[in-house]
Length: 94
Image 1 (tube, rainbow, N blue to C red):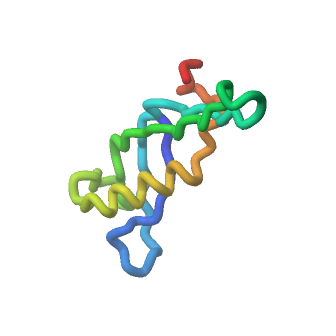
Image 2 (image 1 turned 90 degrees about the horizontal axis):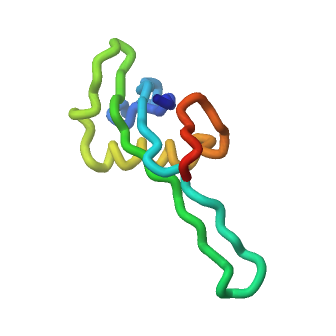
């Protein structure tokens, strides 16, 4: 399962981090922006599901996050995680 270190949105100072484990539901696809219009495709964004968010004590705090905090972590992963890298979790299915 891929992991990502994210700033804990519950910490106002921004010093605390969460170790987030997530499942990649869909790696996304690159847009095709050349050729005739009927062959162009806007592509698809990756889709993930956050499975765990552990704080510095190792406690899973996922259930304590507000929807806005969850969305902030999810957005950060979608912006910063390299979905093009093929790792041990990639099954070849886009």
